[in-house]
Image (cartoon, rainbow, N blue to C red):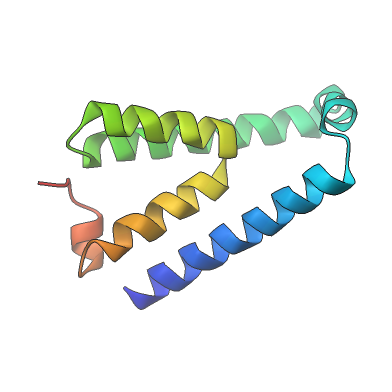
Length: 106
């Protein structure tokens, strides 16, 4: 369980640093348009949002409240893997084993 917490915390930190750096050093509007124009930019977005959709299905299955799952889904869409790492970190802190982490909240 410690490994899950460490990896997810490192993911939160890495994504936070990367996003802050990107937003303070780059021009999201201009550069985002250039990325979308590239085939690998579109493929990367398809890959990202496929992962978001799969993880959203897991969260919807795991959480007892559809409202909570929907809030997380919106967060996943906006923040990408920063939000998925944050979800795993927060969920892992509420359970005692990986098995509990991978089962629905009761």
